[in-house]
Image (cartoon, rainbow, N blue to C red; front, side, top):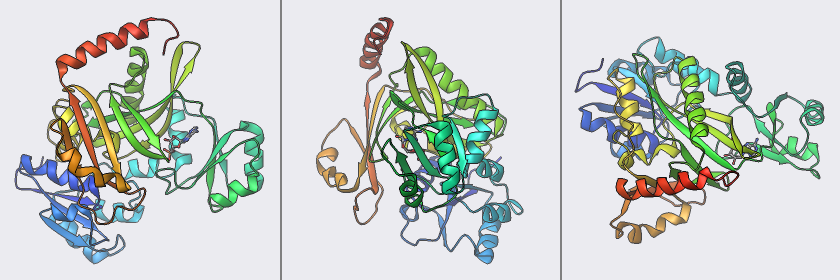
Length: 377
Ligand code: AMP
């Protein structure tokens, strides 16, 4: 168990690391951020820093000697880096969890073996395999690279008229999987935490709206039948336990409606704090960042109780230029990540609105009345 004054090492210097540092400080814990880029948003708010590549063994060894535990803000930490550090200092979550979630084929196979639902998928290593997979899965389908995909990068949708060769070229002919296209009614996520003692605490189901493959908006509670939310939370709990995970992870899912009933299909696991959990900073008793810090420090987890009805908007690219009007809105919790240029697609900040509990209770009563009408979802 870390003591106040101890230091948590974080691999990665982006906004997630920045918000982890900001959550560690009130608990009396320091953060040492390790990242290759000198201009990471986390460097503004950390107690110590290392700017070095993930292959620099001298820098990694020095970092390991200065921290009580290592965690990370992104899933693509090289396996060798994680193993090198794990030989010297506890790494939480365990690098084995990374290995299961870095590769979409390994990840989907793992989830399916847990008895949970995923879209139909097949391994694709060549154009010939892609054609065979298309014959088995049908169209439309989505071709995704097995590794290093995020925010829709490394993906190609194959519709009726798409030439498979074009899709194969679009993913750079990298090892991939072909997935059935899911005609989802909603995208949702579960942000879950597991402590060193095995306790699991989950935030309420989040509903996510993407624009150009990037998260645009999160609404909580998600519009979903109560049994759908229960099934989604149970699936995420099953995953976090099976990974023997310590820390926060997010499970992204599709909700599909089937003749008035609903089903969840799991899309992917993000082994880290997640954009769809940013609302927890003001909207829950314990934020996802504080929860992750508590977990990796070996502390008891906090309460995930939600404090109202939530709307979180990402400030992507030039949208962040609206900050003065958001700052003037007394109901808005504005977060800016301190990044320089507002390039299109770049996550510059977010804003959270928490509607008071009394108002949201009324709203929820309305929502459940609406849901009681068959087929009205
Ligand atoms: P991913 O990188 O797998 O999270 O995919 C990014 C986004 O692409 C998802 O949030 C969905 O909006 C969309 N998407 C991914 N896979 C599928 C699928 N099999 N069917 C329909 N839409 C998908």
